[in-house]
Image 1 (cartoon, rainbow, N blue to C red):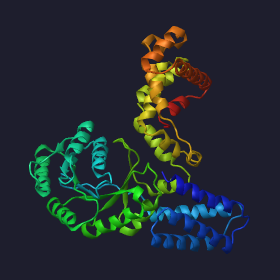
Image 2: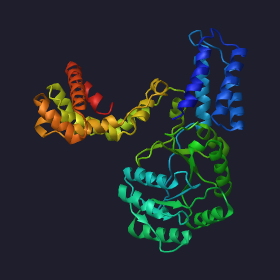
Image 3: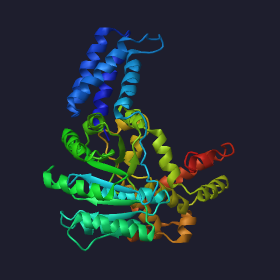
Image 4: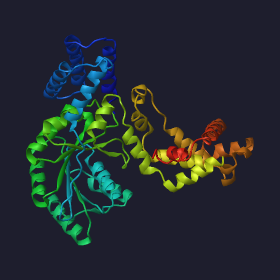
Length: 441
């Protein structure tokens, strides 16, 4: 995310690195360049003006240490101001003291609203909740069916009314949730291609009846300033409590993320970073500022690793490594755990310094599927003892996986390289391997 914005800002900072001493002139030159970059990223004009005024004021008032370069100083100030603009700290979902908690999800048609409601349901379910999805979008054809399919895929019940009145559907859903002790209730409301009076009146009626704990506005990050304008319109009528930015894994210029909180005065709650239902992240202003400035987000990377790693498996793997018993079955298990962490391109972008290097590089994640298919095409004996893989066996494995013999040879070569590395790691101190394969604990 933000690859274009990040690379453009990085160029501004690279130009500053050649400056030996900070001065009012080079600060103002840098501000001019940053202004152009932010406007091209579709950041709101008022937000840009206030942001740069704050950065310039702080930069001109700094006593610069000899050990700090002008570029380092400006990056630090820009980072701190970005955190302020984005919200300073994480804004978590609130719960009602009297269940069920109601989360009302609103937004324009095509913003990813229905998919987000399912992602939110999955997210709260992982926190030990028993959510209920409510199909209250009776305008868009097949919206109820879409939500039903998504709910079934994550094991979350979906309430569908037998009336064309969305207010009545929500009322019935709340009664049902109380009866069977489901909490929270997540309302997938109707959207339109643009804001109109009919839509707003309907949403106000749902709000009045359900009295939601939170109203979450879903904005398509790829629409830039248009997302900010629609957010303002929704907020004027509904006073929503937070914003969700979807499609952050696409060609997002960053304008919506940087502008929307300042324009509405309400925090960003979540960002959707992929199509899969687990591709939802709480919004952390400091981490997002780090990503925008190309500093990565190693904390989120570690959290993702910890969320998917099985500690028992990690301990068993450590024991195997110490005995040099790492097999293709173990290799397959590691591949599957990496897949659970999400898009490889997204993960690499979290590592400081890597995101900018990958700007024009397409990571072919199909290779993981190909390797997985090849290993699954092997017999248990072949996975445990790959040294028995002769030409005949390799041809059979390639045919079974729909790949070539060269692909099998490449997989075995990669496996051999990993085994060599594991033998070197055997010399590591106690617990070192567990830290590596146990989610960087």
